[in-house]
Picture (spheres, rainbow, N blue to C red):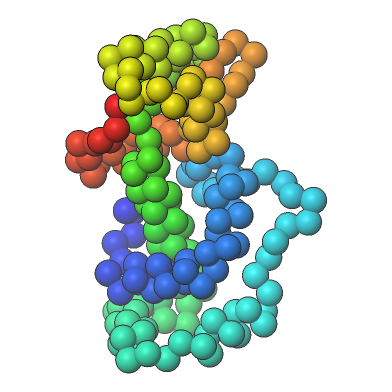
Length: 202
């Protein structure tokens, strides 16, 4: 994510692009099964959603605010300095930056909704990877938190707690037990790199 140090202007444009195509990106995140060096790997859909050329044209022609034009000029200037203007590598660099923004926002979303007990379970699974852990080893993190914070967990049973980890693509069920995913390992690394002190839920 950080191997290509683009300025804030490119990140801002990436966020704008994500807002325009938030539905398509949301579908991609829902189908993502892993994040690795090769990028995002998604589950197949019967009929895959794609961004049509007319949607691209609408995106390019529909926004001409002074700030957007200023950011576009900054990007052009930065690309020229790096010798990337009119180069196929510019597309690769922008794609890399956008992928980094998507991953960062996804991790922010996880950070704002995950429980501390779930993070503790992921840390445990990470320490055992790639060896699966018995489900009971994961459940004990829930049980400990539910016992310590009984009132908070009155409406959060184990199924909901465990289901969150599955739904976010942070764990997978293997024949030998439960295994942490690449996405979760990258999330834990991101938390350390960002110096996050949360989560602020039990």
